[in-house]
Amino acid sequence: MSLYFAPTPEQLGSTLQALRKSRGLTQADLAKLAGVKQTTVSNAENNARGMRVETLYRLLAALDLYLNLQPRSAVEPTKEEW
Image (cartoon, rainbow, N blue to C red; front, side, top):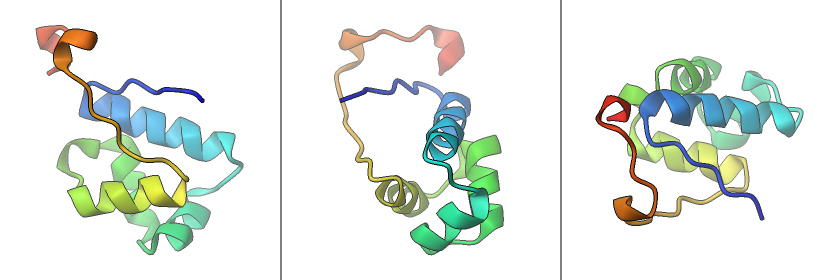
């Protein structure tokens, strides 16, 4: 099982994009699986800062992923990452 670390919205977007591509999906494919528009997937990958929580969960479910929270002390990001 692989773990993905995304402490910033930008890294979250990049991680979502990488995972989508690793599964051989286009943005349109992922959008259809998640029940959202292709532009929503594009926005999530390029500017995840404004993504709705519901959208994140839809994309994660479509990619067969779930959100795992852990204490910040486990991996402490720098202030620039927040």
